[in-house]
Image (cartoon, rainbow, N blue to C red):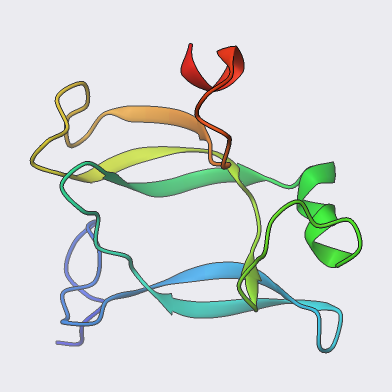
Length: 117
């Protein structure tokens, strides 16, 4: 039995992987890559994404003159998503494993009204 068989959860291996649509500025193309599934820290959740969209802000990563933040290469696209929580950090109280969620993953200043309310 291989690491990817037997169930609906993440692959049963030490270094489980997932697919990620990534942009590589070196060849200016999108690639469907296998990447390691991240492990959430105590204050984070892990979401199995079931739907994600690309929008104009994703395109900003394609142009280094317009990029809002320094980005890793290759860059995983699709920061607006929905999915099911698969892991919950020990400090997380408002979510549970199995919850359906929608989110906008982006960084902010964490000081202005938009970031704090």
